[in-house]
Length: 45
Image (cartoon, rainbow, N blue to C red):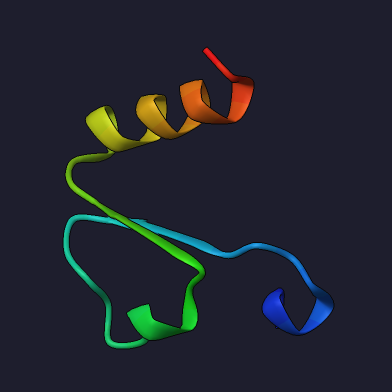
């Protein structure tokens, strides 16, 4: 639904989900690693 509205969709998960193809960006690994890295990139750090 988000993509239909033009919103960028990101999957952050340990491994690809069954619908991983539906996301604009995919990041895989532990949340303790991937979420802080993603936030840093968003903030331009």
